[in-house]
Image (cartoon, rainbow, N blue to C red; front, side):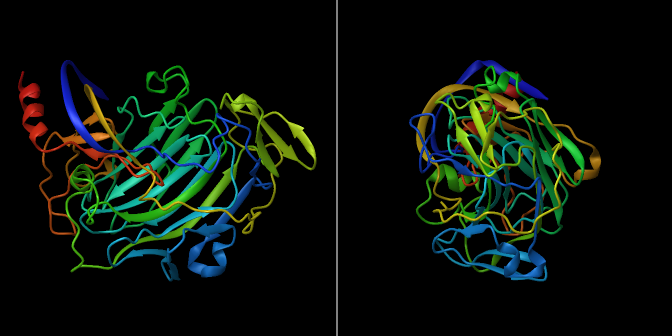
Length: 390
């Protein structure tokens, strides 16, 4: 459900744009090397099996990810840590199921991100002190000229309970699913995609990470969005990922951009030395193959989830996004937020305190590896209440 106040304009200085801003080579600007594909239609990593399950994943420089009985452990104990991993391969339309438990901690942000070379992006993001919601978001071609794409999804105790967060994605629609329950659908022709231009539609890697939005050196808006300044008395702050299952709707040895358009129709699928065109709306592959636990690997640099955002200053109108889902995923109150450049201002303060000891704030979304939406300064809250009372 979306509420809008078109008569009001708010000028805000935004510390962070929630879209990914870095790519090794942008194929909408020049010819780039082909992306390593997943030849199998199914891939899984059960991280409770230990480090061996991390085959076909790369870790960001200076990151440490440990493995225990609860799976991969993305732990933050001090400033400047942002443990991050990323698949060595791309998928081209498909499904990613991530069973995980978000990290606690004021200012700590856990992220699940699909991202492409031309800055298409799909996100789940969790703020450590928001104990009742997860943020869903998307970007196309790094476009941050509009910021009304985030939606808050109710979920019970994401920092204390494991849930399976799913992204199911083809050329027609993108589905956000929690524990098998559909909670959001974005269609290619949704007004938010601007005629499909901002619809994510190019081969993507999966990135998982945990970062500190409330640490020293972060812009003020980012700190506010992340729930406040982070202290480490209650550390460690650990995001656990038990398992990941990936389905690739267009299995391939590699994917090649046929032109500079960044459209899904332009992608060449290369497999067994043959080139074919993609199947866009398929929801299961016609050439099913056994689930693989290892996939092609390729050395590449991995950007941490805390360093892919850009500072911007914008003036614009705002709208308020919320979502309705079955009550089964909700404990606590749903917070509705002003959305402006991924900037969120809560419509009401939460009544419970988060693990970090501060009241949780509604959290705008990541850019997972895109670092994320930001909360407008609290002075705007008064403006929001004024408009709501009109």
